[in-house]
Length: 299
Ligand code: NAP
Image 1 (cartoon, rainbow, N blue to C red):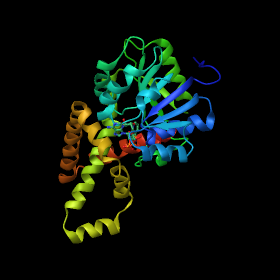
Image 2 (cartoon, rainbow, N blue to C red; image 1 turned 180 degrees about the vertical axis):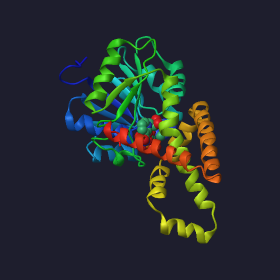
Image 3 (cartoon, helix red, strand yellow; image 1 turned 135 degrees about the vertical axis):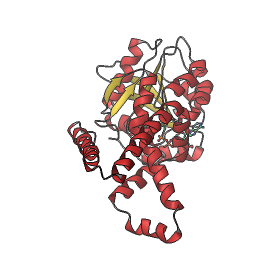
Image 4 (tube, rainbow, N blue to C red; image 1 turned 90 degrees about the vertical axis):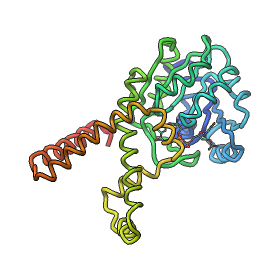
């Protein structure tokens, strides 16, 4: 097994699902040469495999996941969260003892629960979530610096070995990410407010605009200003991925949505009654949050 302080983290890294996230990891690994000596991509689609090779993202790209993971020192699952359980059930039995299993799913309670029945005592599992993305998907969408200065949240389980955890820490640090560790449940609550609710609002506001009368709709498109434009960028995200995330993080997301609706009602009331102080206070809080994101290099 390769070391973690110098050289490569893993000898053979197998990325299952070379889409936006998976292909970004592969790009980073190829360009820097510090993640793994050998890179293998697994995808159900032969066309996606061919594209991965065309782009030069891996040493091998195959639809035969079972054969691929049998050679792996690390298997990284980069498929939609709703597919994680089935993919793990198919691939984990073929992994060699001591190889590390990890994933990049955007929800952690549902993914760790879905993978749990497939876990083996000799295959340490390190759940992870790199908090970086764009509205694009597929192997062409990846970026070598996608994870630069972004958070990667690790949610180790009781059975996660310290060595495997350290290897995945090193892998993400070498992708440029900053690390935090937390429980899967805490992760899901945090992500419900910072990521899932904003996407829900973006999809909803675009739907509301689209439901308006024909002449208004053309005006919305013609006159789209920065506020609406920013929402449309988020709303362009992949429907399968976001369907899975909403359903997988149902409870935390509904709780945050409930809190948001109460706050939105309070704002509506302030506007109705001309409570200028309340309105200014809320806007100032928003400005403060933006300022601290810029200071934290997360903007
Ligand atoms: P993506 O670009 O759509 O890539 C998904 C990959 O998974 C593709 O290679 C796809 O193969 C494969 N796949 C889809 N359904 C599958 C199934 N049922 N069985 C096996 N493979 C399947 O998506 P992504 O944005 O990289 O997201 C991948 C994971 O990263 C998700 O779990 C997501 O929650 C997480 N994540 C996403 C973001 C983000 O902002 N995008 C950020 C952090 C984490 P085909 O192309 O052949 O269908």
